[in-house]
Amino acid sequence: MIANMVRHMDQQTIIAAMEARARKLGLSMSELCRRANVHPTTFSRWKLTKKNPEPIGASIKTLSALENVLKAAEAPKARRERAA
Image (cartoon, one colour):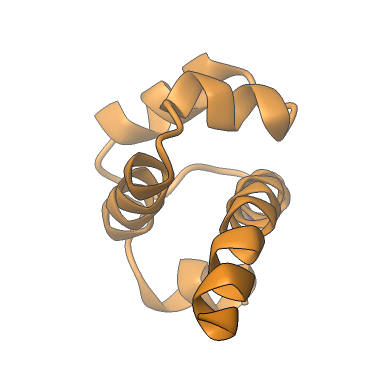
């Protein structure tokens, strides 16, 4: 999924979406990065850079780690909503 996102979207769109999801979950970007074992400066550097980072493979790996943490954090809420 992330590989497709990176190919078809710019990094600023991906970053904004991740920030919005984290905010909705009450997670700071520092906490999200910590849980994903991503250095927070990596994320902030991406945010400050207008073009997609290189190498793209490393970016996909990092974005996948962040995405996995977001999905894991969203799962309990989704289960609660389905049960209600």
